[in-house]
Image (cartoon, rainbow, N blue to C red):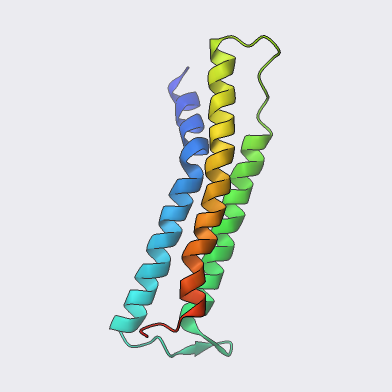
Length: 121
């Protein structure tokens, strides 16, 4: 396996977790910043700034993870009598799909309190 193949496979497997981690950091970091700098009650387009930013970040994160899942799903499936290389590829593919699915749930779970509970409450 070449270095670029390894990096690509690793990013596909860990991509959902990386997106979730960035989403988590943004949601709670932005909420904390809004409270610390006292702009949590500001409105943009008639919506409070914190729920709007969280909803936008959640939408972007969900789109990115779904795109990763689609790319992973289109990877070729192992042959009928797979060799070691094909088994490793199949394992990486199914692991990436499972982690991506769990990441979708984690992203929604992270956004839920920030959307339902008022900031700085």
